Image (tube, rainbow, N blue to C red):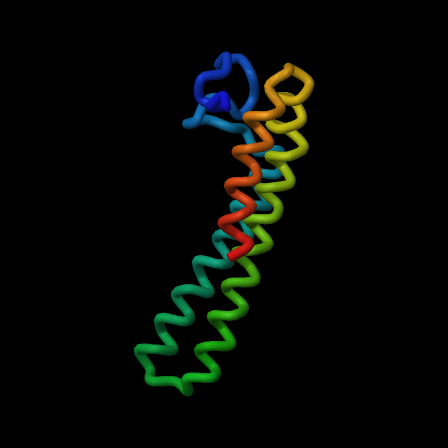
Length: 106
């Protein structure tokens, strides 16, 4: 199995340190909102709020993070994986994608 990091660097997503996200502003906006929610949960704990209320907020945070992850997976599949398949490097890209998807299926 070929590792994606060994593929030519002129292909999108094959430079591990740099990928241009097509909807970067929306993702950053969501993450900033999530950051505020995390601070809110910390404040609830500091203020000794009711456990169920805190757990409800944690559940909302998990859902928000899952939504960001799904969007990133979609971007990766439609961009990086699609390009790799067209370039004849689909097997490695699909293997990498499935490894990431398995992390979310736990």
